Image (cartoon, rainbow, N blue to C red; front, top):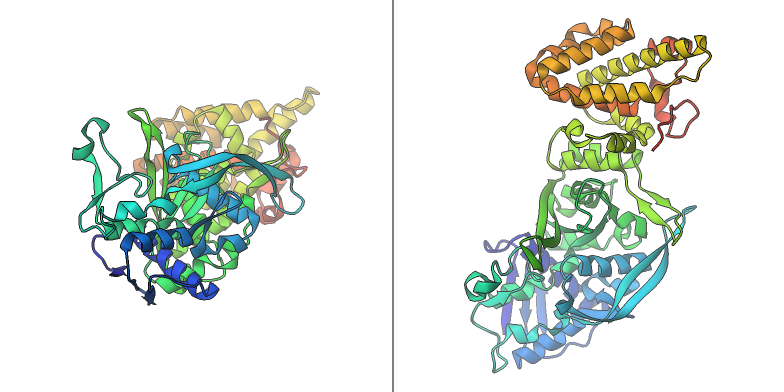
Length: 519
């Protein structure tokens, strides 16, 4: 019997191509480990094809081959194609959790003998985290041989029904009409889908905007070269990653984190990975009996997007936090907002005002003001946008300076929080270009003479006067408020406002000169 798989097959989706890569990696590992093959198994591999041949009973062959490819290591899923047993324990656990949290969520897909708790490090000088996961006795990938063959044990010539765990989103559409709405695949295509989890990547989601039920993201790469991708999937950045590295704030963050794991090389050229598909799986109100695809992005690794994401990722880092029952990973809210936009090829600040629509969310955003300020200085963006933000920073500085002066005269503590809330709610009431224009002109005029506004009057008026720009300007103004860093001292602030705030790149949230906002 002979099977040939080619990345150029027009019926293949990204998941099928990932399956071809997974099979390629599995056979390469057979070669590396010098596995004693059975049933006369031979194979040929090149950059775009896998050719597989064997002799004897097809069912017996598939049963042996799948059990060799999909194993268990102390209750943890062990994928031979990834050589997972030689990975760091963190990476082994996340592959195990990721597969169970996405493809194999349903209890019918695996047999468990209980829950195991392990302590894993979140990094140097960070707390340990208590991780719980199911310990397995078996899972469906090991036992799929019978589905691929007929009653005589020969490889089936008819299409077979495919469950959602094998091809997410291609499950039965209505349980009352199973035979009419089920999804079918050719047996060879179903076989190749079994190996997709080897080539895919997994992230734990800790989103502040999404449904909490969406706890894992499945990353499916667009593979154009099997050998190059195998080298990428086996590189040390992935094999030696710590548990914290497998966390993402959202789908955009997950996709871009995967595409920029090795920042020292051109991912698209070196490894042939131009884009990836990122999806979540869970239950929906109209089909609680099965796991379905709940959201999906296609993320592309352009030079500008990768640069801007890397800036964002370096300035807005996830942190390990100590807790009563062990540590946990706190993901960046600001990075989630920015990465979602970058993943959709939108301006990095797009729609911030609509999403940050409460005082609670604004406080979460402002908590990261130090990193957010650095992002705004380093990200690739229109220089006029940066000038607009700078003018808003000056207006905030002067306004806080006025509050400080008045409080000093009354021998009171200046209330900057109240003014921050007033500005934020004022921006929230801007529903069209006219109301925004009234707000921003009043805001700037009350602050006094703004050096940046005076010097760049014509460029900045586009942000105020043109109707098409008002939403963009509102987003930038809110980001200016959330990222503002100043002393609140009128004399120091007015003196500092006429200078470029270049030194703030080295400052981080928590410095003495940052105005605290309680959260």
